[in-house]
Image (cartoon, rainbow, N blue to C red; front, side, top):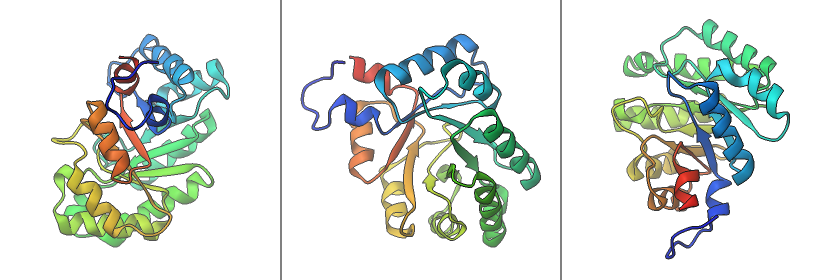
Length: 223
């Protein structure tokens, strides 16, 4: 595993924080298998994959990797009951971690308590499984972002996550700094969307992110 000189973090340290991601609509089993093989070889934190592949990955790889999948993805406006069904099925299929998208329309309507209740409902369904809450920062005002920090904290979720990677923008330094200021104890930060360089990876980890969602990290660290 090679890495360009001039970086203070080793490739191993970087990759241990990466959710190695493949969420394209046209992802084939061949794409997913390549992702999983890389995750096993390079010890990434997890693979983040479409729900429809979770069971096949678990059957093929057993406990060699952590499987993360997405719920209400990427637009967030499916009803809570639908998200709940997705979570329950994902866990039955062998998912370890869930990345859910909030109802962004509810956020824009100022229905923060409703959003908080949905997150709480999903977290109860997740039980001991890690729940990351995608708030899709590119669509939110600063006030709404702060409200989401509070909702995620109050609902007992494990992470607040910046972006789906399918919105108009991804993670930014400013949003991570804002999260850090307003999330409660015990809530971690995941940056995702547009994390394209080793510099980006290192910057977000130094800013206090515990996870980075990207499809590029293994390729970057390889050379």
